[in-house]
Length: 347
Ligand code: NAI
Ligand code: MG
Image (cartoon, rainbow, N blue to C red; front, side, top):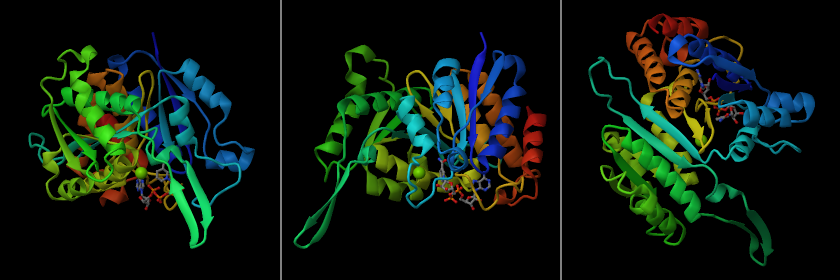
């Protein structure tokens, strides 16, 4: 059986870093089944040319003919554009990719040393304030805007379960629940309580007994993240807190060009570098491909190809540590392709 991967470079440097990740996947040889790639369209450029940002063909091929996917980046305009909505948001919904998983790891200067930061942010991806139910009313004293914040037991339970599974596979086996239930006792209260109860569910039957549970109010969690990131292992959070925390955590390890993520559901996984389409460096062939390459590794790890994933991560760590072949965002002078070739040599 082959491993079928959809490639969706989309906009800007997505078109430079996704081909880079593909070259690395192709170099893994017998560590993986035969690879079958599907090149798929999406993005803002596509929208301006054709009027559609996410063709139904792309969704169809992903659902029917792919086991996993890699997404580049999309250039979403900050102004409202009639008829346009972000294809990445739609893809997460279409494929029910309810978890956004973002490992943040600092590469230690020597290969035996422990990284100073080694944590994973697990963000709920489908609800919270991002259900986008906003209303505006006119009152006697001016306009009044409201937003609905949805937290369900079902979504909290499945994201909690995902966090515990990830913690179980890590050396420190610790889950920290991020919430603000001192103020939002109903919504955040439900999230906190539901995630806490995951290990006691009948179907879990003791599976997570070795995992430690901690919790932290979101504001002090950000403070402690910057002062003592080593206290965190797996952080699990509702959508909005998770969004902010995961970008903040990425700042702990230098360039955005290093940080990978996956969007995961129960039956599909999509790797995605955390960075955007970087219009300021587009076309110069200097985009850092390491976040996309690490996203490919994370995708493989999620599909249980641990050895292949580890080989990629080890090669990437080596290239960073070695320091001779790096793109300008990391202080180097090399081009995207030269970094890819350095990773391939190491593989
Ligand atoms: P950005 O991540 O594209 O760029 C921020 C800065 O980091 C830029 O100076 C860029 O050159 C640099 N950078 C990012 N990735 C890099 C890489 N791989 N190698 C070297 N340097 C890199 O964020 P920005 O500028 O705020 O947004 C640009 C566009 O990307 C916008 O249209 C935004 O909506 C979109 N975006 C899309 C995301 C996604 O697809 N998930 C996430 C973030 C932004
Ligand atoms: Mg974000």
